[in-house]
Image 1 (tube, helix red, strand yellow):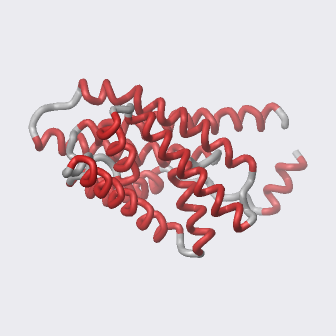
Image 2 (cartoon, helix red, strand yellow):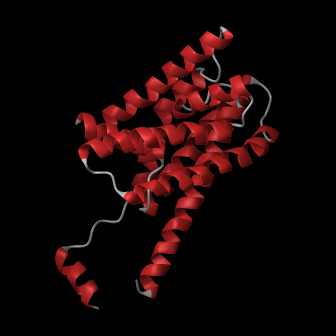
Image 3 (cartoon, helix red, strand yellow):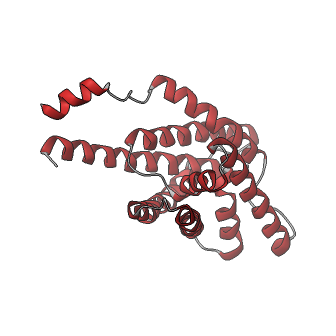
Length: 227
């Protein structure tokens, strides 16, 4: 690997780290409004409410379970690659970012329903920006997305369809677990449904403003390789 490629590689991983921090900040803002966390975070947050473990810790635990399921599904299809194991340390860092940002998010939280709803809405935009930054890094997905990709490959259904099924399955499981152990629901409210609708819309808008680079034409790629 020449120095130019090494620098590019470093920049992409730095962008991934920054994107994870931005996304974690968005999740923390959404969650600290107490108007409902994001669909994919609903189960970790419910476990936090039941056990007292930090939100970051439960996020990591749930994502490790996601990774194990991803590994099992892709192994059955014969398409699991060792590089995918890097998802575990990556999500460990992401989980640490969540714990790091939860306290500042609580400190800046306004009082009153409308201000908190606005913060939740802005948190969705911040989360979407962080997701787009991670996409642009072109490095590795986290287990939360990796399991959806694996389900898409294993069940031969479109990624978008499996993403919706996966997210709402987590919400339902979170509600059932909370109802069994507390008789109520933890962390699933109107903000959860707003996140389900808004994050994807915000991400699409950010991708329009910051589109993914097109793959070079074969001739151009050949010339670059020979340069």
